[in-house]
Length: 261
Image 1 (cartoon, rainbow, N blue to C red):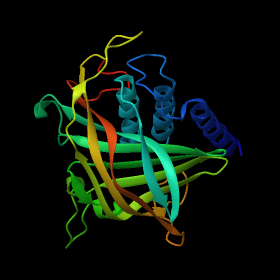
Image 2: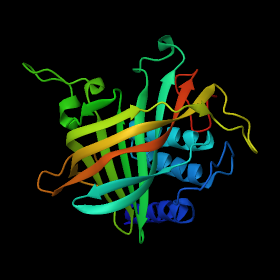
Image 3: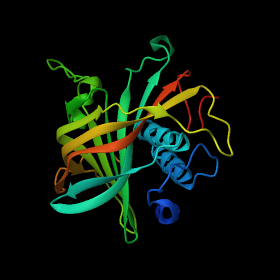
């Protein structure tokens, strides 16, 4: 009972954090320590880390860093299981100054989009290494069994959808296609306001073309990556559109939401 209450309180806290700052700002929030939206993504990063999901925790940390770099979220049009919805969102693309500093493939780009519906916070994550790719079923990324071949994560896109608040559910992409391709319109990230520029990070604002048609399956619990075989599926579609983005170049292997240590 106590663990359930703790999770409920965490969900309400996360929803509360976004209540005041989920709306996209009308101008860049610059590299400020007091960026409330970045703080909200840090809370989501901690929530995912507590669920032993390092990959998604990193996505939210980099989203926080992108906001502190001065990216202004765009309106993202999405059809969620046939229902039109309007999200705020942006793309953050990350790479490392030298491949010798990391075993990760270069230029990983991710869409993070969110909206508030009553007491429920909805969050969409889509990540990939190429301009366009099929959405891979998560089980295809597991170690290969005898006589089979495992699929490289570089070959496809991953997708996840969350609902947090009075309703809690998690969904994982199991099929479909995704496109997140840069439409170069570059400019320098704005100068910091009340914070120094993050150490070991250089950034450049740009734009990305986005198109999604993703089939998602619900997981067994809010913190699980195991698919519920009898649960319903849903499809998220985003027609071709252009959204704000930022390219981040790291000089360290494991940057945090405030830069390199």
